[in-house]
Image (cartoon, rainbow, N blue to C red; front, side, top):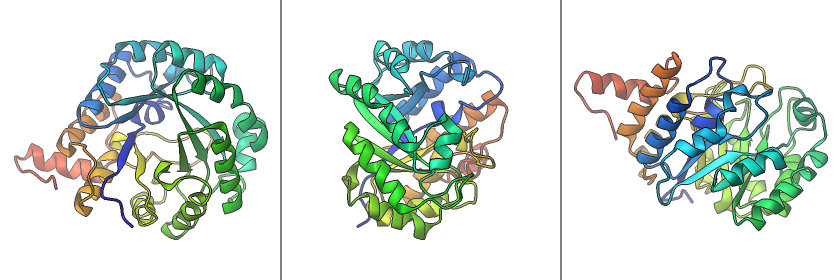
Length: 307
């Protein structure tokens, strides 16, 4: 059941950097996107067309999209919460827009001040506009494995949101462990249920590593046949609405795992490790990638550790 090949969706430039307090220079963001694409990442979540009042780090979205090199075969995604955001995405020639909802009623109310049903309904005009424009549409479901406010999230709630996003015409749907509380058993249960209502090959796993379970959850997802995984180079990221949530699982760690399992990713781990070092130095924070740190140290000392 484990797939022979998986797609890595790199979320570092958007999800990874959006909560950095110090503004990351636009040129650095552009370089990050370009280097990730050159390393073999075929889907890069590049920026977010949101209000700069709420997410000032993404205020240069148009400039980032204008400055990147467009590699053939690479999907450049952007987050778009409303029609204004969609218009920015369309003008920037984004390949894919990302809409988002939550499987937790409490999280939805705290995050965007409305319930799940209303939050998804708000995306109807955005989804229709994207389809009319011939753009890919991806839906992301937050708190699918647990919520910082209500605790446990039922599998039925996750399936309900999957069905709602399917009705909007989503090409892919992300099952996201926003606060990193999921465990392999629960991960398998949720993904097994989700693929009963949406094609397995178009479901993706998005895991945070708050409790150190991300790599284990990814392996559990592989056992359910999942072929798409999100990751953030150097383990960048977090969620401002989920207290205690650490960064996304590191891309280096995910690729190292896949290499060890003999699963094709098309990503050059050696380049990825260098990219992790580049962005960590740029923002003045150490990399959270265990594989990345280990490999970089060995490379620096003249030995190769890449699988």
